Image (cartoon, helix red, strand yellow):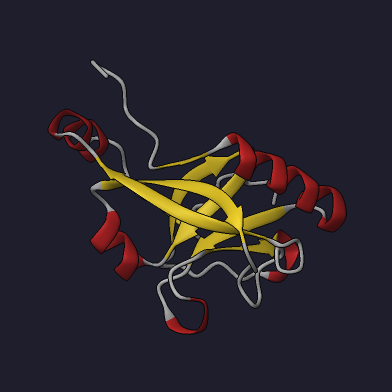
Length: 137
């Protein structure tokens, strides 16, 4: 990966296909990487218009044109790791849009190499409500 900056978040083809189905049904969506509580540490998919992104939430990137956020405290733990959104059989998170599809989103991960970590350090971290991925939204 010489000279390029890696993405902080990616998705498998299966995840992208489920996202497309959810957007067809619910309109624009976003993800927030959960940090625990009721639904464990699952990536949660919400209608974009119904989820308030906090000022301290970190925008990890986009998958299939859909923004993915994580809390600042979770980002501090996971900043050296690429998150890979995947889909597996099972029930989705209680509040996540895939609930009822008999599939659920799952976060896999891999540690960035030293070179990748250095490349990422040069890129500013974007915050949620104060630094939207798409200023028209």
